[in-house]
Image 1: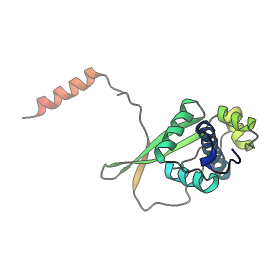
Image 2 (image 1 turned 180 degrees about the vertical axis):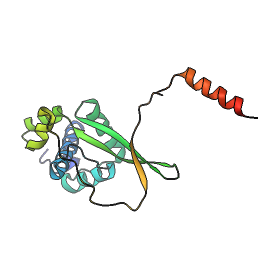
Image 3 (image 1 turned 120 degrees about the vertical axis):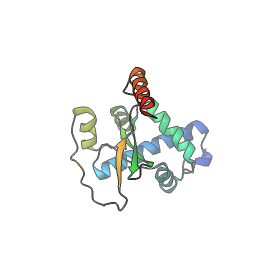
Image 4 (image 1 turned 90 degrees about the vertical axis):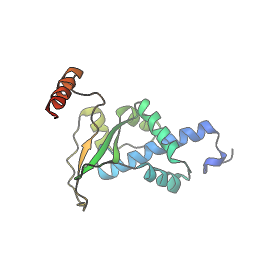
Length: 170
């Protein structure tokens, strides 16, 4: 191995580590640039930034794999979001991804400078100021965070509701 400028001359383990570190660094840059505790980058945007700045060509499924591993390693927290049009249709929005204190410590050990506001947010409870909505959207929809997978009502309540609906039918 002569240089680490492209992904072709790296062994798979080195390429994997380099890709994960690059994804974390992209999140760090975006969060530091906009002074927020999260980023809402789409997988396609991550793919473009990896290709542009790190010359790493990677598929969307591989990015999903790396993001899942980062979530399992407790390096990022993910808040899935969706929206609903007025006619009731549901669509996906980019997930909010926040770097955890564990990730910021890892990046600092690697020698990467972490912004003071992010560090204080992760370890000292600093609250970022609320962001004002700069661009208004022409699409009218509402945003929601994904609800928990469990139903809040018990099966007995559902049974009584179904029975009352069936009794009301002619």
